[in-house]
Image (cartoon, rainbow, N blue to C red; front, side, top):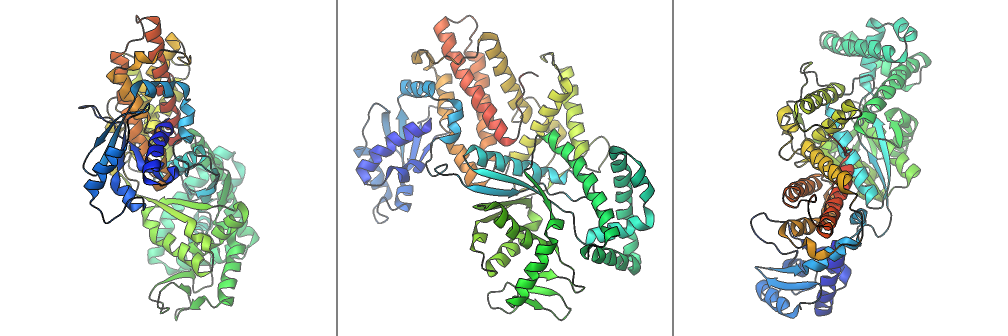
Length: 583
């Protein structure tokens, strides 16, 4: 919707300044709604015209602001032009604002406004979640999973093709340690004779005990470390018995992970892992040696020099002294494979911020190898979740966290006087619980650590996922009771009150918020937009009754609530939340 108004103002600016409309449209921003005072609808920072070469950098900024303001004209779209300190504000014809909203579909918000955002389809490869096999799904992987899902959803809504990749940690020295330990303390008989679910529980419980116990032994017994190194060496040499044990770990774990992803509403197009790239990793090392990019240190390690002075002051290790590969070696091979397989325009990795140096080195190695597309590889880092636990204790497994969210939410719903009769209360409680976890996670900058608090997460009031779901459910209830509100024809004069105008002004910002989220890959912009929209909708629901109002007025208000509900639902889906119709 904002596209129509931005383009109208941009057309005027283009005639005055001589710059193309497409350059000017992104410079016009919708003004956030204020509770305390009436706000303009669009704003232009005149300094942005200077930065884009539209105005001279030598002239006084305020003088240019006032001169440009005088040249702009009031017309059928703009009813007032207001000069400020380095900014020009525009008030839009409110009747036209309602008219344009009436003829636009809420779904079109996701594709409108900025021509450079969805002018052509790009292919994005996105790797996220990436848990380690033979381990329970730790809550620490929740952030990577839901952040990657949000980015994929957003890119798809904006017209891009996205390949969602789950790159499993299914190779490396830790499997040497686990394998050696399992051979010492585990039971093959138990692995063979039990059904899948029981097999997983027995194997994984044993594996976790073995991993901890062997780690403890390894601190005091060098033979354990040597046995682990030997097991991994046999794994890399594709020893049949060793591979068979590893494959059991992998297959059982992946099946269990899929159940967790289904509960989160997350899907993947491609399951991969370090193990898929063993042969390619050896090819990478061969190429690096042939091109003399792989150097051997005094300790026998194979490294790639990343220093500007070629003095090994900065380097990445790709081969251990025993000849086995490292995680980064397989990551280089995986990147090359994805480029050949998917022909991506952009590759996005979502991991915690402790791996930032790793990805800097990965992208630099690719550039050293002559792959210029490495410039289009992006790492999205995130911080830690502090204080997350469940009734079962401090061992934070994602399954326990999801169960805890469902349990607490179902208890809250049973206690609430306004709860509706539900077909599947457990499923609804889970969906609301997941939305609460997602909103709590997405409210701040992704790179920041945050403290987890169950009481705050599941509050029905305040800026929470529960509040978003409650608002959506109330709007859906209103529309079920009085009709869908999808009638095209209604009188725009019935939506000139301050509450209606505030909602319409806020909806102007939707495409801008999606653009901002797409540029910095941060969900907080969309979260803040939806929370504000929910607060505005709650106020309008109280003050703009449908029941008992004259038919024309009721129909206009229903149309407003229908549009609000549609945008709210679409935004929630982008975040990875399933909107509920009753709660």
